[in-house]
Length: 408
Image 1 (cartoon, rainbow, N blue to C red):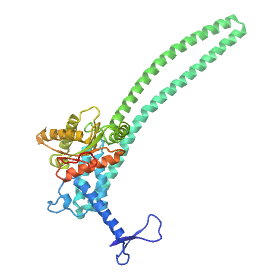
Image 2: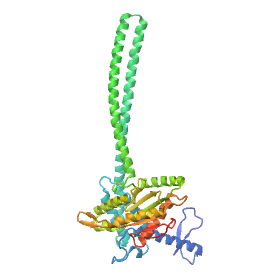
Image 3: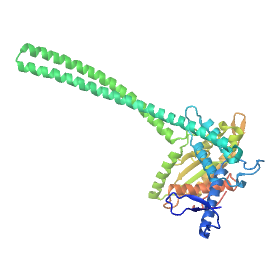
Image 4: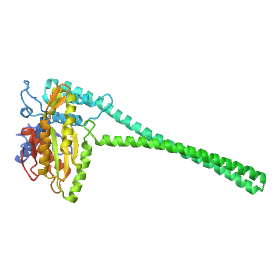
C-alpha cells in the first residue's frame, strides 16, 4: 500500500490510499520515502535506546535495537513524555520524584507495545496530563499572584502617601491664603492671630510629614527588600537545576550563545562536552528514584571537581544528560579533562543507606568550528555521545569536525 496526494486540493492535501499498480511512484520518490523511513527508524531507535531497558518480546530478552519498528505516533508520545520528565519542577500535590516515576511507568508501557493494554495506558496518560496541567497552571498562577500582590501593596502605599502629601499641601495653601488676607486687611489682631495659626499649623505639618516620611521610607525599604529577594530567588530558580544545583537548560542556552559570540571576536578555541550517565534508568528501576537523585547529585559534584576552572560552565540539560562548556580549550585539552572526569567517576564507590553504587558516563566532545552556531555545535557533540553509547558506553567520542578523531 502506498500513498498519493489527491489532485486539485489545496494545502493541507488529503492523503488517500491507492494501489501501486494504479498509481506508480517514480524511483526518485521511492528513494525519498526510503530515506524518510530510515530517518524515522534512526530517530525512534535513538529515542528508545536512552531507556536502557529490555523490551519488545514477551520473554523480555530482546534489546531495544532488535525490536520491530515503532509507529511514529507512539514514538512521538514517548518523546513528549520524555521531554516532560526531563523538565519537571516541584508543585503542590505533585513532587518531582512521584511524577517522574509515573511518567517512567507510562513510557515503559508504551515501549513494550502491549496492544491489549494500550487503551488503558492512553486513558491513564490523558487523565494524568489533564490533572497535572491544571495543577501546574494553578501553582504558577498562584505564585505569580503572590508576587503581584506585593507589587500592588507597594504601589498602593506610594499612592496613599502621594494623596496625603497632596491633601496636606492643600491645607497649607489654604492657611497661607488666610495669612495673605490678614496682611491685606491691615488688622494687627488678625495678622497676629493668623500668623500664629499658620506657624503652628506649619510646624505640626512638618512634624507629621517627617514622621510619615520616616515610616514611608521604612515601609518602602521593607517592600523593596522583599521584592528584591523574590526576584533573586526567581532568577536563581530560573537558571539553576533544583536537584543538583547545576545550571539548567535555559541557562545553558543563554551561556552557549554568549561564549560563541566571544569566540567570534577573540578566536580562542572552545569545546562542548555532552555527557550522559550510563544505564541511569536501570539505577532508578533497581534502587528507586531516591538513589537516582543521589547519583545525579554526586555526578554533578564530580563533574564540578573535574572541570573546576572559573570559566568552565556546567549544566544539567535534563534527566541524566549534562553539558560542559570549556572556553579556551581545544579538543585535545578537553579530552584530557574528560579522561580525568571519567577516571574520577569510575573509581568512586557511592554509599547511600545500605547500597554501594558504581556508575560510569559516556561523553561526546566537539570543538567549535569557524562560524558554527549553537545548534550545530550541540548536534555534533550529541552525535558523538550517541556513538559512545552505541559502541559500548563508558567512553568518549570526539566529533569528526574537531582536530582529533579518536574514541577511548
